[in-house]
Length: 337
Image (cartoon, rainbow, N blue to C red; front, side):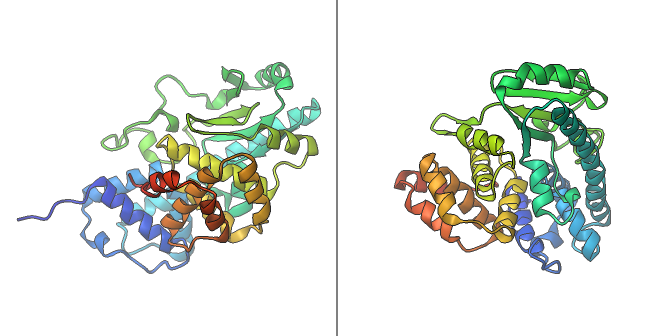
């Protein structure tokens, strides 16, 4: 009787376990399951790496430490090319951000960047490691009309404008009706000829997401960081390390709740814990103030699971502030599922 082929969950679980060790610096460790993988399993692994934004990270590590003998030759090549392609893509995104910064400064519009661009520059040894689909900017809502006109006049096409913010695309990078985009939920398996299945690509569109409010989440998993973001805008230096960490934790929790969380979000948190000096008391105070200890704990315990690390003191403090009901519900979650 033949053994049952690994499921998609089995393959994702193996990749996550491997990356916990691989990204820690032990590039020689190889899970025993890999030696049994067929072309089918590697196709699924490629899809998982695309969905979770893992390709450029693995590609960077392979470029530094050499190809892995556990990975097929064409997969080694694909992953290394993912890193190089993402570097080219980030260069395009950075050029757009520089143009936008210049326009906003010249027109005396206060703003600051957060999430992808700032995280990649702060945490990663090479910005090409961090995939991103958009540029996130926080701006005061009173500048809404002025901003829409300004960016529209300088090569950015509005796509959505509402009370929460606006989404624009660079004219030269605007998605056409038949262009697949990373946020359309494309079924990757079985679509090997699609542009999406190529992973990070300069041909895929990227957006400029301008935020006027940070009242986010769904149902019982809501949080409102408007006051924190407005204060950061007023001070003029962007989010502090502690504020940025709170936002990243809550953003990851929101995606967990929506069942759209990605491995790369928790790798951000993992790097943040290792590289940034934080005042845990300030983070805990903000969590209590915004009544979101349970959401922040959820993201931290998922990070500990994914990267096989011991719970931090902050994670333990947040856990003590979380009700047994949330602990039970959230403790059962797994990113693979």
